Amino acid sequence: MIFGQEEMEAYIETLFPPDSDLQRTLNGIRSKGMPEISVPTAYGRLLTLLVSMSGASRVLEIGALGGYSGICLARGMTPDGRLTSLELLQDYADTAQEHLTAAGFGAQVEYFIGDASDSLAKLKQDGRRFDFFFIDADKKNYLRYLEAALELAEPGAVIVADNTLLRGRVADPARIGTTLDAMREVNRQLAENPRLMGTLLPAYDGLAVMRVRS
Ligand SMILES: C[S@@+](CC[C@H](N)C(=O)[O-])C[C@H]1O[C@@H](n2cnc3c(N)ncnc32)[C@H](O)[C@@H]1O
Image (cartoon, rainbow, N blue to C red; front, side, top):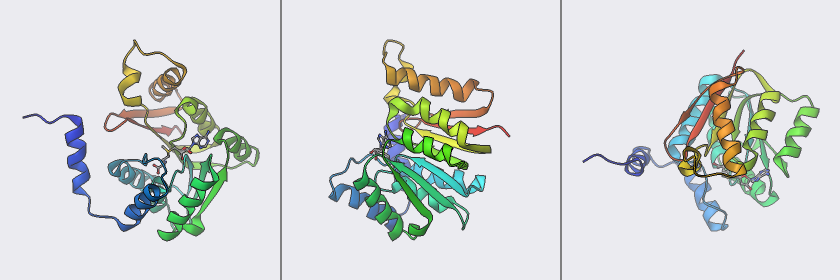
């Protein structure tokens, strides 16, 4: 019997031993009635790996929720690393801060509250630069977030974006809409933008992985 994608993803999730910091985070998200849309375990681990392999110390996350991906990103940072996380809602940022603190990263994270487009403009104005980006907020603005990341990126920076398959809808030409158009353009850019090297991992909801050329 050949297993489908969902069965394989479920199998992969069984491989990883319990992780008390991440479990506390998921429990906290559930108990507060927040959406249960943190990155899947396997992609969280990939974030840690990619941050660690790239030697990143200034990491920018767009979309904090309860801090699950924040912990995964922070785990890969150099010891002096700093995570800057952009989140629309104060409550969510407070929850994320609580979970990052419980995981030992409270002093290494800062939150910008409000619309990420405004926060990105402020970061640009302040001359901030980053060597790793994780885009995981409102899908309709992904192209804008990719463009902003390119403006804030150090040469060689890594840019990762979750949900770039939109449950497969991007691959269906019959489906149209502004969010789909924006996501298709992100996927086209990872393949064709001369400033980027990139690919798209098809498991779960699709993960775009890119590197800004030096
Ligand atoms: C998919 S969740 C993030 C999950 C998180 N990265 C994780 O894996 O732990 C998306 C988050 O983006 C936030 N968000 C949505 N629109 C936003 C915007 N315009 N600016 C900043 N954050 C936004 C939501 O409040 C939510 O917390």
